[in-house]
Length: 228
Image 1 (cartoon, one colour):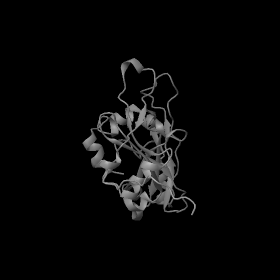
Image 2: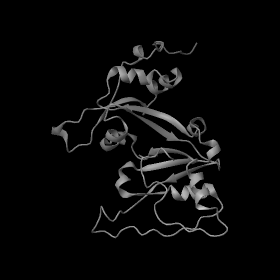
Image 3: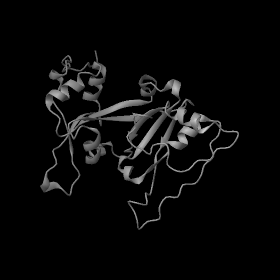
Image 4: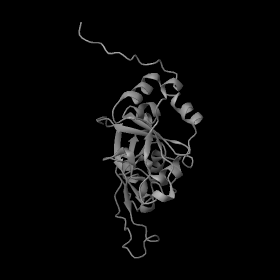
């Protein structure tokens, strides 16, 4: 929680306390310990991973990498999905009705309180289309939270150099690299450098081919087994 980049994280809106709820200090201390795994939702077409503001903010100015995941079913009560709701900020939208926070009452469920606090952000973040996996503090480690995501594709920014691309890919297990290279609608891609002449079209992504010799993988056999 302390590593998130929004200074208003967890404090949007007013909250009520009563004698049966934990103190404000207890609630805020707990909030700082929960695990938060943030992803951007693109339900219909994951190729929307070429969204330029996100590349500029979170991928080292278009030289980094976007990991495309598919969510796995979640039935463990120690983890919860929280879809962020974006609310109007009066300063940015003077002509619109500003967001007026209702005043939810905290309960003795610290994990439920954390979900409530982390469910709203002002709308200047709405381009992120954020979905959060929230974990109870004892299960906030990467290994515990990674189990709910399946790597589907890897997309590099248009400014990424081949040496950096190979350095990233060669950190993956060989079976993951094989999976990305051979599966349909999956793979390894790079954003095509946007051009002013195509400014009205969204940037495109292109598959990176002929990577096998550079990925420390064995050559694939060219024959198939047939009937005896």
